[in-house]
Image 1 (cartoon, rainbow, N blue to C red):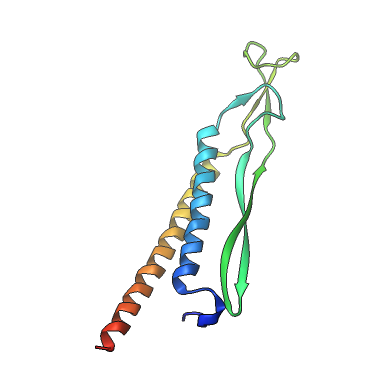
Image 2 (cartoon, rainbow, N blue to C red):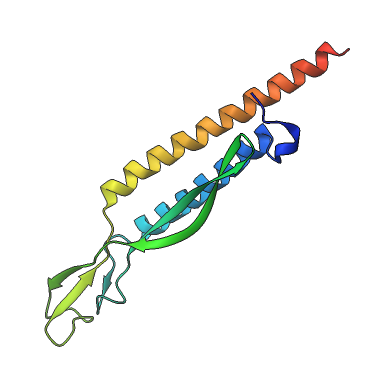
Amino acid sequence: MSPPVNSGFSTFAIAGRAMAAQLVRLNAIASNLANAGAVAGTADTAYRALRPVFATRYAGQAATVDVTSVERTGTPDKRSEPNHPLADADGNVWTAAVDPNQELVEMVETQRQYANNVEVLTTAKALALDTLRLGR
């Protein structure tokens, strides 16, 4: 059911915003996977996984999603590699705080959410076209 006209959200707007949020999530996943296994010389410069933070936005009885921020998460792992060119004075390096397996699970979930919203748009479009045809 579509929200009231004065709510500011149509079915198309709600699904579009949800798809945009999933795109932010997918871009974060791509960045995380690209940096998995990266090594740094200090814990402060080591890569930390990106995670978008979502918030529900309401307008009357309709709701949609906003990405409020993208935050860095995780704690880099310290490894002893005294011969590594980035090793500190103690011979340690830090690896990216990214779990590739978790990222792949996130990717599949994101793809499913995106596909669900595409289906919502397809159905809403078909209903709108059917409604127009009734008026002929």
